Length: 557
Image 1: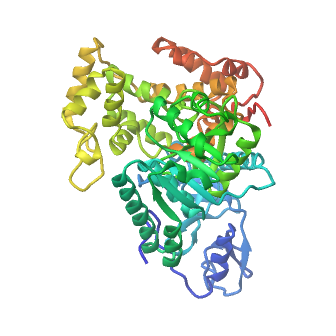
Image 2: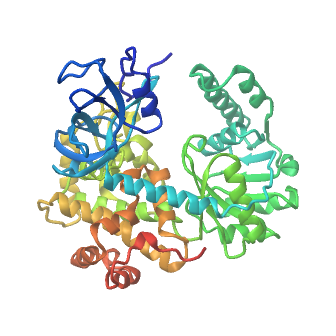
């Protein structure tokens, strides 16, 4: 069996250990109690280490304590802290603090038992902070609130149609197949369809090789996948999902045709991430049946779907979309129509500041390090290199007739990202580790000159605030505008779609940890950098209220 990545080895098991490890599986920590000298000792021993007596018995521990000492180990994908934990019972034990903001640990911080997976063995006893555990409890409550919105009268979807056989269409089709639906994949290009079927087959083959899927089940899924150039093939589908490129005119024309062929009872969905779905729905004679299903890439792996309801989307359609998302094992968050919807609207606010910080004096490695220290899996410029963002943004600017000196220069020099071996960073052949490139530093300095900006030293704290606080501010505005029902919905979107760690709750939960009065003060101090920092009215109101928390806000039930 292939070794599981980023997991510690399974513990060595000795005779007599079984109760200890069985307790760990259920989240309980045991020690041994000596009946002769009345002492506790941690971890199973056949005799008491203090008096040598073999008259010992298992004793249940609270699993709570404080940090006695610690160090930090930088480990991918997240750091951890080997630590000595002083348990409530007085025992000092060697363990590790994980799944927490270990960079902000302090001696004396409260910790609680938090088992850590191992390679094909029982979980190892580890600890997390009480703060991190509270954030995870908040996340559980957020999931529960979402689940309550799904009707208890299920609608079963059996046949799906996906229009568009690019990366997103392939991912969506695979997700539907994995959920047991038959799928018609529609595209005008035979070559594109052939490539899509090949890639879906390869994806399912990988699942078989990794032991996630039986060959028989793979064959059954491929047997209900049909590629077709004829749009009329959608007629029997219970759900039709459009996944073509982002062009309003193209999508409106396509939905007018979908309207002609789709079943009257079909759920009609667009996967747009940027366009106004009200305008797309208006191209049909049944706008009440149109909804946005914003999948995240790769759609077969990412667990999030933003379910975007328009001004005309019916309650029946919204409920059907939530049920469909649950059927294909996605977490569906209902949101309204606005630029970028919820997740990308916060991301856009952050990315604009990241670009501006480069011109003012920061460098990619500083910006990315600060974001990783927040707990995100990677920084802005690492992400752009990995996803080919430099080329994507260049083509988008070309269509709009816009220019960006730095990004255009990177593109023109062939610095398009990881696949090219160089982007904001350089990469050694066959490796993904980003390396600082002096050429990029020079280009950034030239860009500052072109823009007439005098560079200066920028502190990590300023970088942090200019990246994270606009996200929180946009989240508050989304709540004010009624685009999203709950602050916790924003946080789930950022956990599932963008890698915000569950031990930090989400941007809105993080706002409460900073403290709303302090947050408003820091935003106001940054207003000289643009209106994006003007504190949202909701933040100002809550900052003036006693013990108010924005993460508790819900607009509707």
